[in-house]
Amino acid sequence: MPEPAPEGLADERADELAVLVAAARTCRPRAVARLISIVENGSPALRGLMSRLAPDTGRAHVIGVTGAPGVGKSTTTATLIAAYRARGLRVGVLAFDPSSPFTGGALLGDRVRMQQHALDDQVYIRSMAARGHLGGLSVAAPQAVRVLDAAGCDVVLLETVGVGQSEVEVAGTADSTLVLLAPGMGDGIQAAKAGVLEIGDIFVVNKADRDGTQSLIRELRTMIAMADRDAAAWKPPIVRTVASREEGIDDLVATLDKHRAHAEADGSWQRRRLERARSEVESLTLLLLRRRMHDDHRTVLDDLAEAVRDGRVDSFTAADRVLGDVTDPKA
Image (cartoon, rainbow, N blue to C red; front, side):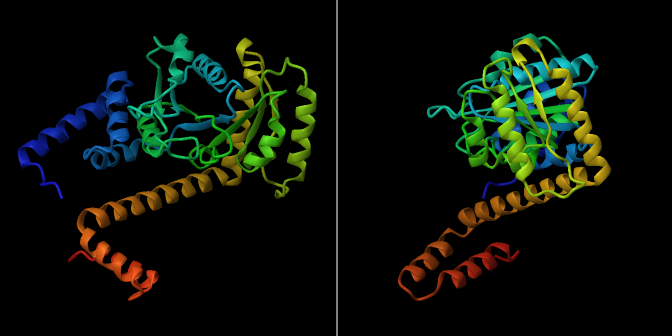
């Protein structure tokens, strides 16, 4: 285990973190960038950072934007930024990209497609590498969202990797999930395979000026009608857009407003956030247990693995012993 920092140095780091947090609350891009880097890198300062940010979180409307490659996620995200800025709202964007196999960094860098907002100090856009994490996001996504939330962003847009059928995790991180589809890409079949009928709060048929739009909408309506939902539950609407020409974006924003109002009225807004917090705590608990198990109890784990291999103990008993050693404060 690393030795604790000397008291004076620890105080200095705490003071530096306090300055960064204060600057981030005024939407200073450099401060926000450094805080998200702390999150991405799993810095020792992360625990203290999350503690400082916790009282200022829970205000932003977190919107997930997912769909197959080529449906226009980045273009739609850029037009949503413009729509929310027209309302005077502060917007944060996390664009999750495939990772470079060499550096682990974001490979595509979707920020290049949103350059019209680069000089707006009320917009913060960050490309984050998925780093092999399935689900379309990054393992650091929940904490990164908290940074943008605490930094005063009224809306946080999450644009997923766009790799197909593993992109359902965004629904557990967002308050509202947009599933983008486009005619002529076989998206109806892909939607059924990927399980997006369960995660989509709003279906967006982008590039709706193309042939096949009506056919795709009919197919979506049929699948939505077949879904087993409570009569009072939100029924995902279908919104047509041509994001490259900013057509239909006002309707999309209005539908997002309706979804939030409905979710707040029926309690699903808080239930979803509770489930998100539960999942986050569970994931962090497992991560900390795994880290402690490998850092402090390697010999015990190896001995038990040998015992399981040789048939001297069963794997369940071995797991109980490891868990007891890891969670015992005297261990």
